[in-house]
Image (cartoon, rainbow, N blue to C red):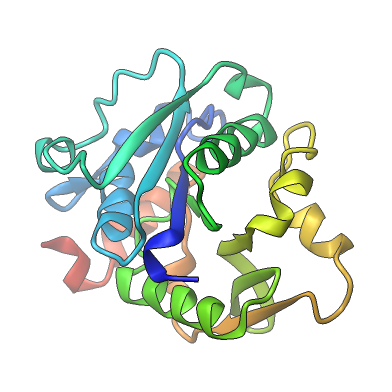
Length: 210
């Protein structure tokens, strides 16, 4: 497998119920939560990133420079995204499969601090080992992003309800995948509540402010 055959799936169709407003549009430094997440993907060695959104998302959370980078990403409108994360995931996997992707990396639109260099490391380890999946981990716990090989596309599309791929990972036999351990827990921070957003505003690492 070549690096350019790993396609990103950025899940950006959440309801933001716990936040009370569209969390991807929240400002962070000179950017927004969602735009920073997409920037990391487009600056990595992913072939392309499929941004899964609700059908009527006006994409106001994306900065103009992200819109100018559309050779590196594409919008996938998920008709039933409001029913739960599995519908967004299935839309993204189907679109990647249609585009002949050999593997997909599932990323979260509300995880703005995960760096592109770590995305590249996950891709490198996946290509080298050729497992069914390659997952990030922190303190021994699997966290997104996760790469899934084409062998698991069918299983990913069978997930139902407001659930992501975690249940699939738990069901796979021991040895089916590998984990890549990272040390900086802040990189895995996702923004679900106003308190978590306030933490980002007050304590976000300086490099991410520019």
